[in-house]
Amino acid sequence: NAGVMQNPRHLVRRRGQEARLRCSPMKGHSHVYWYRQLPEEGLKFMVYLQKENIIDESGMPKERFSAEFPKEGPSILRIQQVVRGDSAAYFCASSLSTGLTNEKLFFGSGTQLSVL
Amino acid sequence: DQQVKQNSPSLSVQEGRISILNCDYTNSMFDYFLWYKKYPAEGPTFLISISSIKDKNEDGRFTVFLNKSAKHLSLHIVPSQPGDSAVYFCAASGANTDKLIFGTGTRLQVFP
Figure 1 (tube, rainbow over the protein chains, first blue to last red):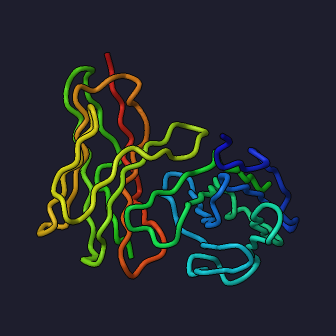
Figure 2 (figure 1 turned 120 degrees about the vertical axis):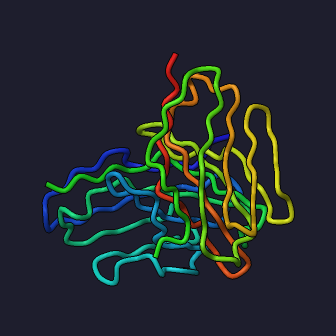
Figure 3 (figure 1 turned 90 degrees about the vertical axis):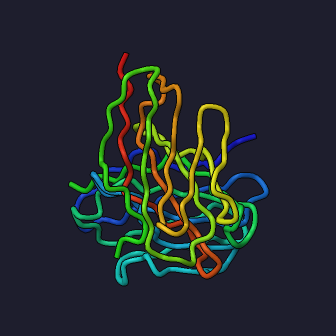
């Protein structure tokens, strides 16, 4: 029973390159959340997606960041033209149902993005 | 605007003693609270939760207390073990939110 799978675990990019982070939710889960953890900070919500739909992207920077969760395949968090400030751990989480009352999120191991 | 606050960045406790981690929130619409535990280089894992209709929930060595009037919750670990050394995140959700809001975390170190 695989948990939330994220890849790659570590990603190194030079300034100006693109970063693609992948997340496969737990089996049967159709709700995906992306969080970012900057050094010495907590987990900051970025975006909440259901299959083929973005439900809440209030935590996403307005530029360079995008996310998708296609009907088939993993969820992708895409960062274009990366800058050093994008260096962080990016965590994906999934849940079984909508609405988080009495529901918990299951997290992946994260992708550590380092921008040189 | 930090809606969930963990004011103690770190806590050091001797093995066998009680660890008390605190969390405060500002949004009175939150009605479900969770604690997550995180080891280095791993994702957070769910530890224990509590609904706003309760003031206490216990699971083995872990107990969460909720004081709604003070908008405060705490996690008690007793007895503390070295394997409990990790970062603990408090999180909250509510009827008008579709996501978990996390605190900044408290690093617990349990020493022998």
